[in-house]
Structures are given as structure tokens and as C-alpha cells.
Amino acid sequence: MAKEVVQELARSRLSNSLVQAVALLRQRNHPRMVNSLNDLLAYNKVVPSTPLSWKVSDELSDLFLIYLKSDPSPENLARVQYLLNINDSTSKALRAMKDRRLQNGAADEEFVF
Image 1: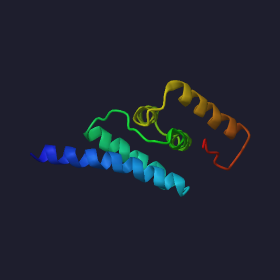
Image 2: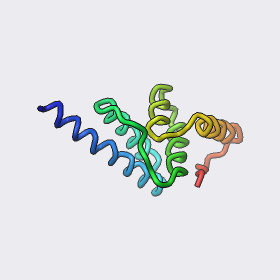
Image 3: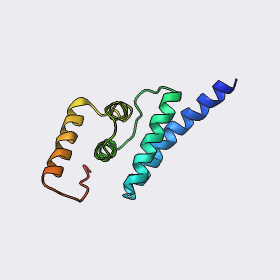
Image 4: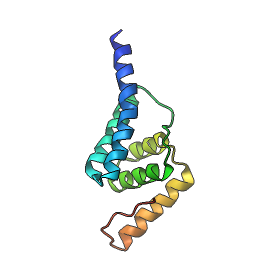
């Protein structure tokens, strides 16, 4: 019974974490946005999920790019890529964008949208 309650709570918090991450992205609060994505990963460990959906796919790409810049572990990055439904070609392009920005020494965040 307790396990079922925890799983239901994790399911609801999983989608809430995505909503919160997007809200923080829109506010340009990147540190808290990364924390929200880490929360998303924690809830996903309790209740494995299929990729999440969001109407504005560019916002998902922006979430991924900023998360990528936070230097996550390869495992966490792969899980975020899966949960945000970022395909491999988009992931590769965003990684290249991150690398170009670092090589150019750019400090400003560049958004996809």
C-alpha cells in the first residue's frame, strides 16, 4: 500500500517537475531549472516513465541545452534526453552548439526559440 502511494506521488511530481522546469526556463532561472530536471530524474527512478510531452518542442531543446551546460553525468544526460524526447540528431546538434559557444568564449545563453 505504501509503495503504491509513493509511486502515485512520484507520477504526479514527475509531470509537475517538467512544468516547473519550463517556468524557470522562461524566467531565465537556470540553476533552479537544472534542479527541477534533477528532481524529474529522481521521480523517474521511483516510477520509470515514457518520454514526456510538451507543446513547444523548442522549449524542451532549451531545457536540454542548459542541462547539458551544467555538466551532468553521462547517465543523467541520457535520461534527460529520453524524458524530454530529444532525438539523437537534435542532441548532437545541441552538443555542437554548446561546444561552439564554449570555444567562442560566449557567456550569454542562446536559446533555440
